[in-house]
Image (cartoon, rainbow, N blue to C red):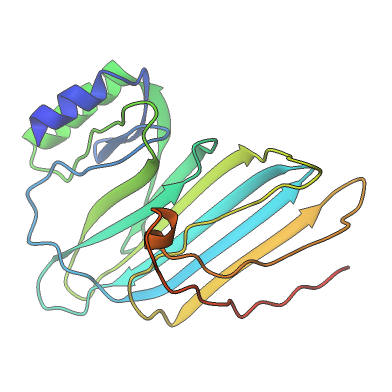
Length: 224
């Protein structure tokens, strides 16, 4: 996949990096370029989304935790579709209690860190996306036997108002039964809120224009 990384890397000027571990762009589609054990779906213990909207400006925090119950190391993958208007402000990876906080850096420096980590045999990624493509955040991490990993992604976006209303959407696709699945949203508008609707879950197939089952969410709306 290194050829793909070089091609995609040229279209972005800045990258997000986990020093000596990951080199990631601040937005866009992510692909890992490592050769770990075969990827399998690890049990997801929690998937939570917390968002605050103040005067149409949304700040979102997505947390995902996984556990490796197997007697050998396995890979855990976390991916999330983002709105084209969204931009990533922070990403944190925690593996068995060790925290790796990301930082924005110039792409050539990120490339150097990636190459150094790759030569040392460490888990590494250095990726980007072409403009106009749907934004997808994706990262993988190796989890030791009976180990735990958690991913925390923060992003922000200014919601567009149309005919006096705006829509906020979040991708929730754990692809498995999750013990704790929660989406929390708070909205603050100086002019007040005249109408609030919680729409049904929309499957990925429906967003692509094909048929799909729409599921009504179990939601509770409260006002202070």
